Length: 83
Image (cartoon, rainbow, N blue to C red; front, side, top):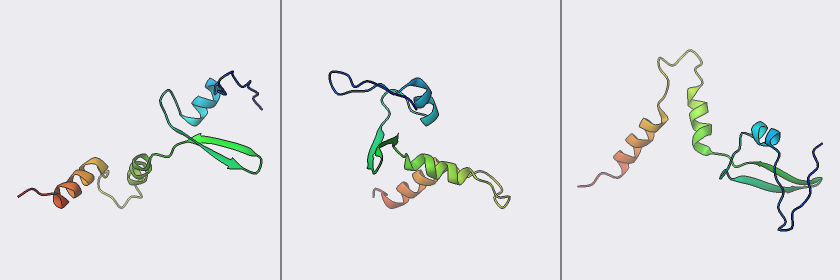
């Protein structure tokens, strides 16, 4: 258990060991969720990172790694073609 004091402006400092564990740093967004036991603080989920991680899983069926950025660019170009 890690204890922290609340500062005069209602702030707490998240210890480095916790920031490292959560993979968060300066300017990162976090989610504060009210739960029965108190407040849960967790990193804001990045949907593009999830998709990239998911696409990088190679079950042996793929011949090459999926390039998410290229797929998105191709889809956007197909939807928004200027004439």
